[in-house]
Amino acid sequence: MTVIIAGAGIGGLALALALERRRIDFLMFDAAEDLKPLGVGINILPHAIGELAEFGLFPTLDAIGVRTRTLRYINMFGQAILDEPRGLYAGHERPQLSIHRGMLHATMLAAVRERCGDAVVRTGHKFERFEQTGTGVTAFFRTLDGGLVEQAGSVLVGADGIHSMVRAQLHPDDGPMGWNGTMMWRGAVDWPLFDGGDTMIVSGDMKEKLLYYPIGRGATDGTMLTNWVLCRIVGDGSAPPPRRESWSRRGDLADILPSAKKYKIPGMDVVAMIEATQDILEYPMCDREPLADWGEGRVTLLGDAAHPMYPVGSNGAAQAVIDGKRLAHHLASGPVPKALTAYEAERIPVTSAIVRSNRGGGPERVVDVVSERAPNGFDRLEDVISHEELAAIGGAYAKMAGFALKEKQA
Ligand SMILES: Cc1cc2nc3c(=O)[nH]c(=O)nc-3n(C[C@H](O)[C@H](O)[C@H](O)COP(=O)(O)OP(=O)(O)OC[C@H]3O[C@@H](n4cnc5c(N)ncnc54)[C@H](O)[C@@H]3O)c2cc1C
Image (cartoon, rainbow, N blue to C red):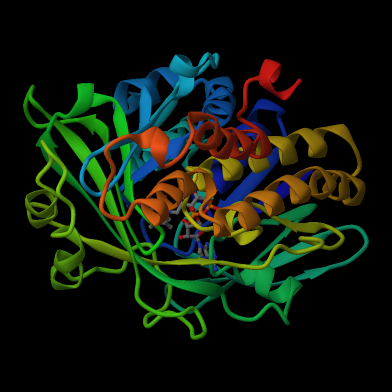
């Protein structure tokens, strides 16, 4: 069996590593001319760290990233709302890692190349279309010089991200991505260590939200590579985003300074942190309506191609990694069309529920609720919301996304 993987992002590489462990042949094709370590911060939740550990990547990722200890929800004035222990500190067997997406990607790519050889990853090959029969599938890729490359195999997996062309052929009536009117600006900067160097901060509300957390060592002992995300509602969601969704689109400092100035957090100069950031990126909060089925016959999807979701709740990369692992499992367990049906039957309900929950703000809803009830801050948090109500919001999300502790699920 040869598996053709269109897209060598986080999900495609997870599938490749899982197939390699099962001795199933594969070839990957990516549209990019060169697979550079792109992006800024990303979080990998304990359940996906377990899968990456099975690929033997944990020591490297652990050395690069930060073991997140606490997820701290605060209001815009820095008043504490809730501290939620994460990963090991919440009793999981594995940590939650906050890490640079480019370094995670580079680590996975190096492992695939080292284990399977450089030839299995073909860059500068943009998937265009496929044809399938009862016994096989042929994928067609456009090369940078305009040529067309034909690849025959037993299975085709569309791991080609938010603008998946495999998905477009499978679901021609899918339409454009849906946008909720929120724009996100992101960046990573060397910044003085705060709150122990392993705390992720969430502040603001659904109209204007700020997240910041360390994702790696800094240039000096007293600094860390710190990721920040600032979200603001800029439209009513009735029209497409002003610019096409792209993870690499540059943002403009002038667009975010007015929002940044509203944060009065003791010990964190939000404006200075953002002004010190060299590359500011912009990404609209968009997703797609979950599909009832992903593929047909010998073709399926994974990761963002299958279930693009709002990047809240730290689940995009985690779910793509789990898709890859479970797809390899099903391919090793049965004949091809049936294996893909079993994979989709397992993964569609879980990922669809996360897509829908993220639209409501996911676990970050705790700051929305408090801000709604006490927009100018509070004297006593318990007058605004009970601890049980706050904990219930985060706990319900963890259970649905599959990273609640087993004893809590019972
Ligand atoms: C450049 C880049 C930067 C990112 N930065 C961040 C970030 O900072 N924070 C964050 O949370 N998430 C980021 N993401 C998204 C994140 O990686 C995904 O949401 C998540 O990890 C799911 O992974 P995926 O493999 O499904 O998609 P991706 O990781 O997006 O991978 C998709 C891959 O498919 C390739 N591709 C696209 N079209 C075609 C085609 N027609 N033919 C062949 N290959 C194709 C792309 O080049 C890419 O390598 C980024 C993605 C990219 C591509």
